[in-house]
Length: 165
Image (cartoon, rainbow, N blue to C red; front, side, top):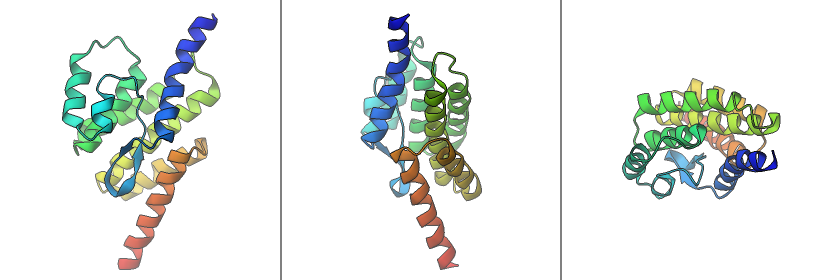
């Protein structure tokens, strides 16, 4: 039983570690969460989303589905493939809620990070209302550095846009 628990906690820990390092930046200095051990994650982190997607798609699909879906969300956002990113980001949110092996706190953190990723995707798609909704929902679930950073970035950008009008 203990071995199973460590395998379940490991992806969450890797995700949190990746977030604390501020690994993947999207437009306007937003940060996106990605699980470091996911195939293609290194290329995605370095800004080569196409290579990351290729690696991800050519690897065996028997890994952590949540981690793979988060990587798809980030890579497609980087490529401005809004349809692909929207699908992956939304699926990651759903998967985070259904991680029966994770504790309630871990599920909330995973969901918050997935919501924050989708918020960045909405920002890239210039859907400010949906971006704001996702960033606020993420902040209600987690006070992680990445989530708070993205909410602050969004609020600052929104104030700047409002002042220009």
